[in-house]
Image (cartoon, rainbow, N blue to C red; front, side):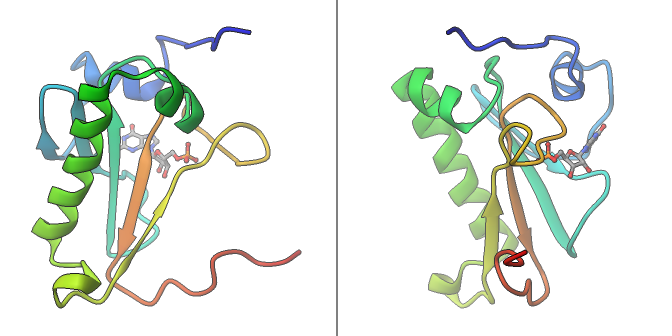
Length: 126
Ligand code: 5GP
């Protein structure tokens, strides 16, 4: 079954310039910006410019160029923010929610990068 992408979703509108964003990094295939409702002192969203609904869509169908660009952009942002534990930073968490059980609100693939305080356990077990 093909993935259904809604071109009216809020991140598609940000990509078209219809809604402003606080850009952290922009490349040929990737845009990163601050989350409007941060859950931590650092909360950056990284999105591909292509029309992908979630992680498995992007990982399965994006071109090698898009995949490399996206992940290198994440690494660059983490380095810029000084949060990499491999480079003296205190660490961070990446999260990608998908679908109903994943509690995804915006149906355009995005990676959350969270940092700036101890983030606690990964999930509650409830
Ligand atoms: P999800 O639940 O889909 O993984 O996360 C969606 C995220 O997008 C939320 O953390 C929410 O705060 C953020 N968000 C929703 N609308 C906007 C917006 O218009 N601008 C920005 N910068 N972030 C948004």
